[in-house]
Image (cartoon, rainbow, N blue to C red; front, top):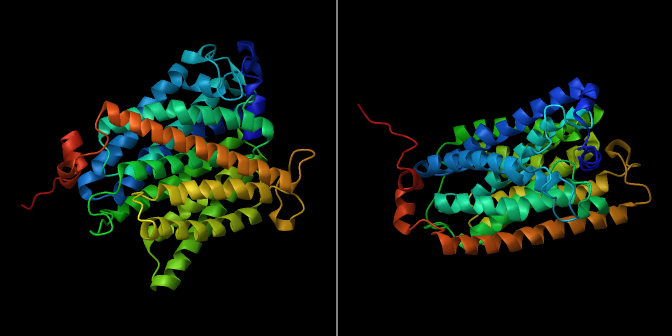
Length: 430
């Protein structure tokens, strides 16, 4: 995606008459991919998260995901797309595309309409702050969540998106491999969720009172939607209906399957039985970890990445919750954050040619494995550090403007009632 976006960004100002050169197949695929990625957020992620919380908080999670998609979509139109992809400097885009200026029906991004490219990227901007919800689920007040998400979009997501995927982004210029969002989506969301969990502190009763998922059927359903939607997430990042997109989808599927199998196998050996929650969490770990590498590695590399993802993310999840006692409610950092970092690093290895069945597409001219791994580590460190600093600062700022965390009484009652005056379930015995 990194290389493709850079080439497309250089072609953004093409005249309306260029629509005569439209690639209808690629355009149809990107439009379909946009729908698939939106499907990941609504209802996929919302149901996945909703089933993991307690019954008294299910609506609050669904509402948070829904509200984020709506607000981010409007902000993307106003100036988000421009700040992410319009020409600017190495750190942020300009405002030449604000309010979709010059993004008309006939304007093109290479062989696809610019509107298709902008809409596809919009869905990425929506799901990233929605992922963070899992880090503070069941304890952050709705007004604070909404304000934080808006500020975080501008301070973290848009700059990092520009760094990695815009033609003049400084990490793009250094050759960072991030095909579909290992750093832009998963590292930013994972690190932000960890910082939020630390700032808001654990839920009342954490590590003392069982906080079991209230509806695993809902979670497994949402997980299936995420798996299907991820084909558009990674396959669409090729920005064309071609062999690269097909390979990305194949690698995505293999990694997800391997991550689920590894997580389930570890549970089976450790606890005597595999769990549905473990298998779907391993699947998500495999998906998140292959994301930065999906279009640059071969199927053998994807299988290995998925297996490693299941093993590493399983242990990271247990270490964070049980050893470090950090209440990242829905395991965003150990699954998405650790997975994104692991996949970004692995892309620097498995993109190499000459690895037999594991071969990828190769590095840029004059760059060896050592140099590429160095760039990958730089990207992880820069994105992770920037995200952590800004997330901490924004949460402190939001806390000064409006109460950040629900009171103990509100938390006990549940956010569905205290924040929205509704209940997810209203079943009465007749």
